[in-house]
Image (tube, rainbow, N blue to C red; front, side, top):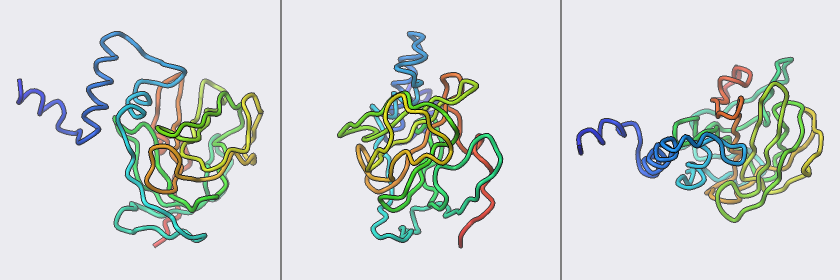
Length: 203
């Protein structure tokens, strides 16, 4: 039994194991969505404290050993856009982390990935901290977490140029960053598969 558990969870470490177990238990009861978020999101709130770096000045100063890539993006005509234009790419999408983390200085403006309507705006001292959920067309939704400031309200219609809020480190976060999740028909998808391809990498 121990060997079987080791094989099943070999790709999960630390709190990710807790997330994995929680999701599997919920799946046994056929629970697919809770408050519009999928099981991975619930597992993340319950079990994951995202390791991040702290951006401490008005420039993009980061601890290089923890930032995978620093990128700069430009506007495109694609359906979705990046919510930030210059950022450090840290934690990627995984079974225990249903989103993408982008480090930027506190106060950096955050824009929506697409036109839509603000479904909810919440502020918790834990989990996602100050965050919001936006509904887009064709069954898509996006979540923006750990904000230091929120500039929109529930029910507000937003477009790609609307400032949703500012990057921060609220909730379970150890540094200023934006945690972005994208959902299609209620299920989390990898933001790197939905957003425009990153073409500009800053050395």
